[in-house]
Length: 401
Image 1 (spheres, rainbow, N blue to C red):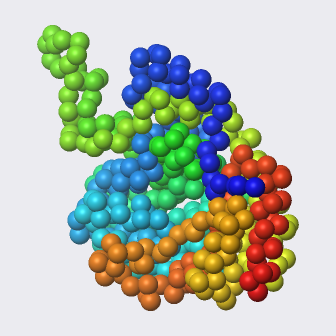
Image 2 (cartoon, helix red, strand yellow):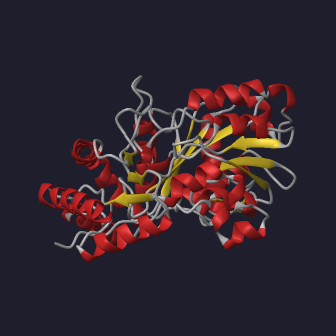
């Protein structure tokens, strides 16, 4: 049996929707992108959202919207993918890296709190694997630092504190026990709709945000939409008679818009979202029932958490090292099961070493990484395949012990 790691769940309905869009002659940003943005907002329990071409773009646009710039600091965890931190450098600000909590994949709340300075404009927690961070705790930290906060621009002035910008790339539709979902927990939440994600548009993402007292949410939406598409406003109405084609560049924006081709995939995925999520939950439960009792094995338990989208199934081999983990992955691949690692901590990468980050300063992140392996988790995974993965996991682990 050959089992891939995470193929997209694309059916005939998505294919038909793309064909219909192609035939419509409107294939770039248009009515379908706007409709999907509205659907995403509804699914996140917030008034507004804006679809863009990636979660990375969403995070960058949120920071630019807030006026974060050179000289400002943004706090991020060491255990994440580069997109979380690279956008901070793109806007000229300084990434301030902190460790994760011991035996978890979440940002260290204590270290994040201690890292806040008068230059800090935001904290970017990561819902790694789809498990929600403790946003109540993060917002408490933001509130507790109000006395040293210096705002950048009108929106941060209205907020009166540093922003919580959630890297929710993995956690679309994750829901807490109180019914609150990713998208309404942090001030801003950036979602990824990349091909391997639970909900996909092939490439793409969306930015959702909570209402901010004193700020018109529709104005934020318009600004973000303009920022994502060169700052071009076709609704510009100049004085006097002008041709129908007239437009204005209201500021020099960026090129981060989603196309209607991608949005048409997303609109079908909206209708399937609950079904796709339930399939993932069923697979995770089966994994848990089979693997949680194995001595020396720790799993990321999506069900005992504050809320999860079941995006990744992360397993750790307690007290083992990278050599053990890598050999385990090689053996699983020989048996037809593709696995992965999520993620190498940022200080292990060349780009971040050049910035002066050293993995020795982030021992918890390294300990979580060195023996972590991710098992296949996708909605097309059959019961037979899941059973096979479990069988080969146990077999391989016993061989190596």
